[in-house]
Length: 524
Image (cartoon, rainbow, N blue to C red; front, side):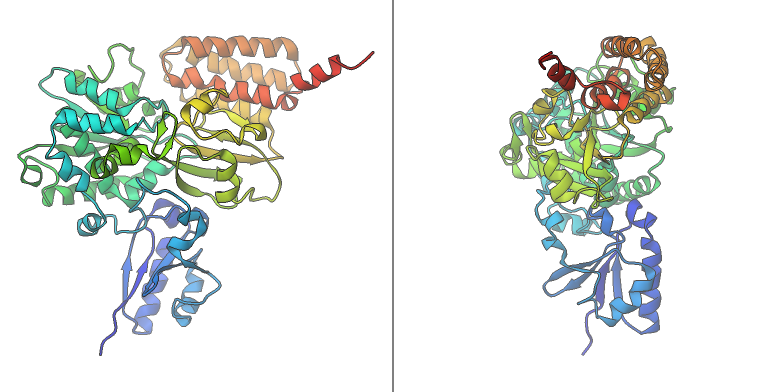
């Protein structure tokens, strides 16, 4: 009587590979061959618990059991323990609190399936949304997405349904769907994790978008620094064509949608939609003047939907389960879930998909586990390199687009970078402005010149050269950049600088306003 082979899952995700997953796989296969043990090894996506990578999961009658972080030297002892009781064992994967307490809608299959196995994708609910969309009128698809409350997950949070409706009603002989996968914000990796761990979700979402606005062609613009994501997407697209989910006759419906991957040219500014379109057309990536909007004159001058990865990957769930289902998650005008990415000085860095309304404090401590150094956390930057540095007094504000705007912050792409009490926020403000100076496309003067002068002024403040005068100059300069820049790079570069000045004045050698106010009220 033969026994079933031991089924093991090891991520082929970039982060896992960087931590030695390929070496662990080689050690597993070598040991199994030496001991004549039959092993079925599946390369899945990462579960998002990056502090446990390489994470190896073993299938048992009770479910998948997690072991990590595993090194090649651990493999022999894991086999000796028959992949059961072991110091690296974390129990059933789905019961690990970090994972169990999430609301995984967009990332439901990531880490669960073989990313390139279409049969597994369908067995876990894949293509259900597309099947439904194929039976609907374009306007009805747009209405369902509108009713779901989905907003752009790339930072601006513009309602997805409104953008799609504009493209649907535009008159043109050709329309396009463009996916912005140029994930360049510091502390962000959700797009990569999705593309490497479940590329078919993005393919399905883009195809649904094409049906919704009557576009027959799409492009995924992926940053060149994501070679494994590009490889996964190319393989998944090829298999989707072979299975009839892309091409001239989608699932026998007579509908058409073609899709291909384009590699980005390595510029942060191409994360801005009009610069991306310029680059996609083979030109230098610089900002376009608006109007006209890309929804009316986008790629090659045709009406174009430009959404980011998570926006488009959220669509299959909405079509499969209905707009109301998705809308039931979240709060206020922020509906559904967002994949928060925990980075910086944290014990447990990784991805957490939660409904809007969770607080930064919960993310930093309940999921992130507090600082990796054991020192108190002092600040967290939310929303990428253009996001505000938030002090502890704002950590209980719910993660909601409008609630964050009320405290001069933004949720953005969901990236979170944590800092402990040793951080110098004056240095961080200078770094933020320097980032803008380096990455500016140079088209508009407020961003091109303002960012360079901003770095110089911050340096003078930190050196105590006419400190008060230069603080006033810096604020005026930030006002000019905020009001006069052509795009969000120059327009939002002052946000981290101003937040650091407001919340951490001592790091600039300044007396805080609160301290000054208290002193003025003291009796003479």
